[in-house]
Image (cartoon, rainbow, N blue to C red; front, side, top):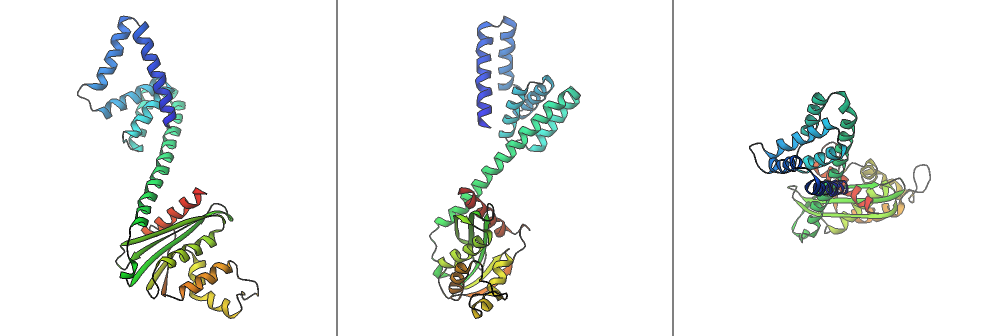
Length: 284
């Protein structure tokens, strides 16, 4: 989106140069007034930008509309405020404004998507900061651990994440990573494995996951699989046996309890690990 703004600014500068060099006296006076109005006066800059957007819509100048939409959005206008300005332009300009309004709305959606991606990155960076905190986990006896895995395709590039908290829900550590070729279930398991690897042995852990595969496997299925020589009740080899065996060995070193979390239900830490796992998968 910055490229569009840069192109428009270059175009505007070129037109400014032409106006100042070749325009008649009235044109030059109008040009100078245009600049003065944006710099001085009683109206706040936000109102002036609104008027500029409305005028651009009524004049059906797509380059100007692009400029004012970007300026308004980057200045901190809400989506609702910008739509209200577009509605004012529709009232003033009539039905001929509608095609330009559609393009403006599409541009606004693009800005929203781009901002969402940047927000996702900043949230991830905020989470990652916790990884760098040098906290001695041996000083804690009880932990709450949130885990999640994600896969772009199944199989496909995968990511996993875990947040380790103390009993008062203070965030202590974040663990995350990615694998080139994986599945969603493998990433769910990997998230738990990597979390347990950084917690000292003989601690009490309450594991929170939105994966029935993980919760049911750890709480009941594993014991049956081991008795059957890592075979299911239908005599088939257990899927992801390598990870289940590693997880079984690790989990035996802790006092584990399990909490099934409903995915995408607003649970803060479940949402965080979900977001981070997806971001890890997207890096591949």
